[in-house]
Length: 79
Ligand SMILES: Cc1cc2nc3c(=O)[nH]c(=O)nc-3n(C[C@H](O)[C@H](O)[C@H](O)COP(=O)(O)O)c2cc1C
Image (cartoon, rainbow, N blue to C red; front, side):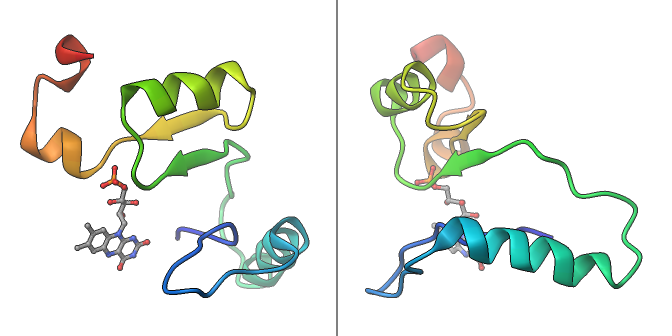
């Protein structure tokens, strides 16, 4: 299950995404899930430079590349 409290789509964003994320984690915990990993993955519109900046700024634990990777299986080499 993907929890995206920091998502900002079609002008819909959360004013307190951290609190919402913690709330959602506690809410799904009631269903007896095995675990919810604590790694924060930034995703959505990142290119190589943006991804490196996110890591350098300690903004996220990981950065995901979706469409760029689908279109370029050799994306790491290209980066
Ligand atoms: C056409 C399309 C549909 C998507 N639908 C969903 C979705 O239903 N739920 C979701 O969590 N993310 C959805 N995503 C986001 C992707 O899971 C992924 O986070 C995103 O594509 C990563 O950004 P990037 O492709 O710009 O690298 C969608 C992305 C695209 C392009």
